[in-house]
Every structure is written in structure tokens, then in C-alpha cells.
Amino acid sequence: MKEKASHLPVGRVLKGIAGFYTVADENGVIMEAKARGRLRREDELLVGDLVRYQRCEEGKCTIEEILPRTTVLKRPYIANVTQILLVFALKNPDYNTVLIDRFLVLAEAAAIPCMIVFNKADLVKKAEAEKIARLYEEIGYKVRVTSTLTNQGKMLLKRDLREQVTVVAGPSGVGKSALLNMVSPGYRLKTGTVSRKIGRGRHTTRQVELLPLPGGGYVADTPGFTQIDLDFLTPDELPSFFTEFTRMGGCRFRGCLHLAEPGCSVKSGVENGKIHGFRYEHYKDFMQEIRGFYENRYK
Image 1: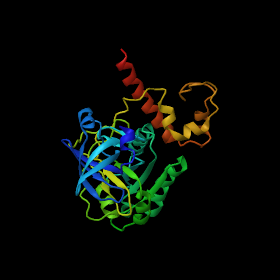
Image 2: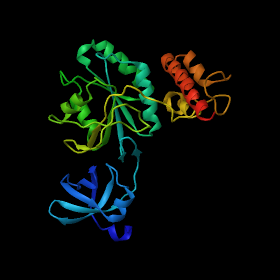
Image 3: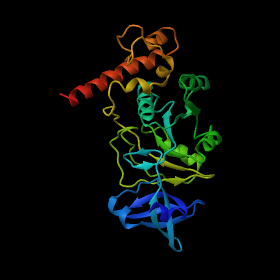
Image 4: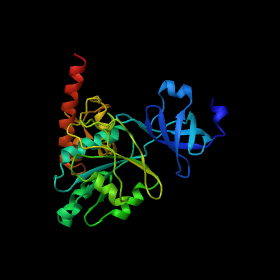
């Protein structure tokens, strides 16, 4: 099958409904597509898949092969995502560092690069916006401060999204859709929930769709979350999802959970200011939550 299709052009699946697909070719031209029988039976195709296709008539094609995926998210299913954009508001609703850190854990668990956007900068003083942005820049995250009212950060965000396949996540009311409309005016973005590795929300949608961005790249918007569970993690996994912990190294005991163990470099890092105290407090809370899930699962 692969040898037969290796000469065929490559496109990206943007949408799929009841066995019918929308595929964009390498120039962004949109085609209607159907999958070859085997692929259709196995229900293998995901939005975001890179596929080889056979043109059959003008504006239509048949999908012959799915190329290997680099990443896969679930709920909604999206393949080959290259970055996650985490959006929070500086005010209305006020940012919440517990929620931010919860999102970051979920993003780290997906093993996909993520960037934080603090929106609604017009509602706070510049110094306040810079202070909260600096907290997460010091941890190692790329941070943008934006305002859809004043277009602050518009050009930087357009550059950040260019040629990427981006999933956008964040709580309700932070201006995710408005932010993307600022980058590409006129979008009416469809929303869906993110995978279990990025978050679990109560809002769902029947369709997943990648939308093209000016200058190249695609974006999928996701709805606000009212609940984000960490129940898919085990206690020994959590430390690696606080990136500044992994940089400390040097704990006395292998597999240190950075709680009551002696000779813990993370606890020392908190004491000497190399790790923010609020991050460590959130870590302990998340660990307690995950242990509760874990213990109930194996009772």
C-alpha cells in the first residue's frame, strides 16, 4: 500500500463528518475527499493527519494513505499538533495561578511545546502585566501579553502561529476567540474539548476542524473548562511536569517525590528562591489529588 501511494501528493485533513473529509493540498487548496475502503472501515483518519491522496475529479480526491503522526490528542482527536496556546486573562476573569499551573501540567503531559498568553492587558497596569508574565518566563515558558482592544501583541502572535498547528486552550471568558479573530479577522471558530492529556471539560462538540491562518498554519479552538482532572497521572509522573523541578537535579534519592524526603534539591530550591513558592504549593496540592485518584483506582 505504501509503495503504491508513495508517489502521490500529500495533503492535510482539516475536517471529517460521516466518512466525508476536507483536505488541503500543499498550496492550501481545499478538496472534498473520501477514504479508501480499508481506512474507512478502520476509522483511522484524524483531523490533522497528513495523507497521500489521489485526485479523481476537480475539487475531489480519494485518501490512499495516512502518513506517520508526530502527536495525537484526544477529545477532540487532532493529529500532528505542534504547539499549545494557553490563554488566560489578566482581569475579568482575574488570572488564577492554580488554574494556570494545572493547565501547564496537562500541557507538559502532552509533550507538546506550549506558550502562555495573558490577554486583556488594557484592564491592568503595565507593571502588573509584566510581573505575572515574568513569573512564567523565569520558569522557562514563552509568554505573550495581549489586548484585543488595543491590538497589543498582534504581530508577535501572528508570527508565533505562522506555520504551526496550534490547539488553543484556556478557561471561559478570557477572549480566546477574540484573540484569534484579532490575528485573522472574521473567523467564527468552532470549539471542542481537549484531550485527556490537555484537559477535561464539560463542553463538547460533534465536529473538530482545523482552520487555516494567514501566512500558513492552522488553529483549532477549544472551549472554556469548568473542570480539569489530573486523574490520568500517577504520583511518580507529576514531578517531571514541573519543568523547573527537573532542572534542579541532585536529589539524594532516585524517584524523589519532593515531599518529605531528606536531601531534596527541589525543597532546597524553594528555600533559596530558585523555585517559586506558589509553584511548590500547587505541586503538593496536585500530588495529593493524584494520590487520591490513584489509591481509589487500585482499591
